[in-house]
Image 1 (tube, rainbow, N blue to C red):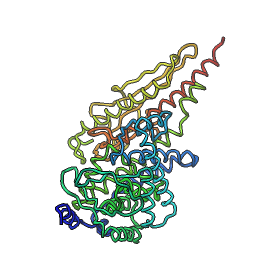
Image 2: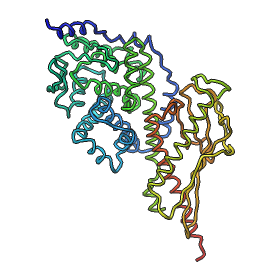
Image 3: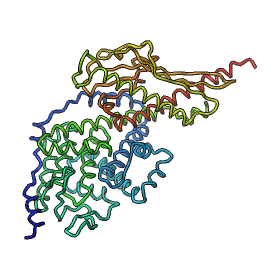
Image 4: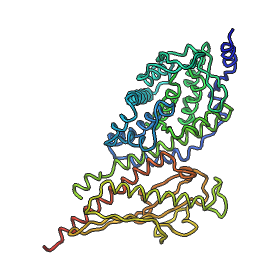
Length: 473
């Protein structure tokens, strides 16, 4: 027996089977308060809107999940701007995709088809079967003909068997330099049969979709049943359960890869809660992403408008009140910059814009659990004016509200002073802003800025038309 055979034997023996769902559930908890609140808010906003508009908003999440799932595996590279461009299907998305290389679009389209397959699977409301998982692997890897194998003579490209369980070991060297064992080849079929049996169990079927998604994803990754494509399959498989519950996938961005891998490593060490928390956070971000996409899609476009014209010390989350205030200030500055950029894209020489963040009076109500910054009220204002003879000006003024005792998940609010208590506020969690802006928040900011720019242009156009109608000559 060669040294490599001995190593494989040792790694096979080191395989640690995935837990039963009963064990998973017993060792995890799930705070569903924000999940419930976000979904209620989204359903309220979607009431009365066309199914086409809602489908378009959900499609943004699907495209974001599909483009970044391949990037997580290193098949190509993405950044926030690229993901936004592809997810929103902006005018340049196809050109941006082409610049990544001719191999990227087929991979992206295969990954899109995989999420469509998962959505179809979810609507059937049937337990997940091995046949369905094998078919999902075929969909995910449709554009991939080979995969890289490390052999005794170096890396080699081998034909990728699609929809078939592995016939060679696929243990890996982790980013920490240690060996990690997946299910040995000979036990993979039995482990997959055990996994699908768990997914058909009454306890699993009655569980919250976040627990279902986290368990299915983690258990599948522990087995790693295919030669390649396991990560992409796992993320799509997890989305089957959120699709079934709220008709949207789980968006995991490439920039969240390190956090993602750390959560999986913690789960391997027995801390299942870390991975449940990760999946919950990504699910909440996805709901917010769809919500903001829906709000953005519901506004009059710029083209149409132009055609017409906390406590004294540390909070429970470990933040100081100054840090919470700084997070709120950062959010206001980011909103100002992003709104100005949105206006600059459509502004003509006949339109002037202004804006800034400054100290000012708070004319809006401060709800329970919130406060103004310790240094005093902070105001964000943006204005537009039109040139003679159609002289008109419009503005919007927002105030900053921060949570009194931020736990890391409490929301900072930017509220419209003229519409206090309305749905015209922008919210962001403290941990989306600290220590840096989260990727999904950046995407929501772009949508929010576009919406504000559109609304200001609509109002300016109406006022300018009224001025021209009232002129005596």
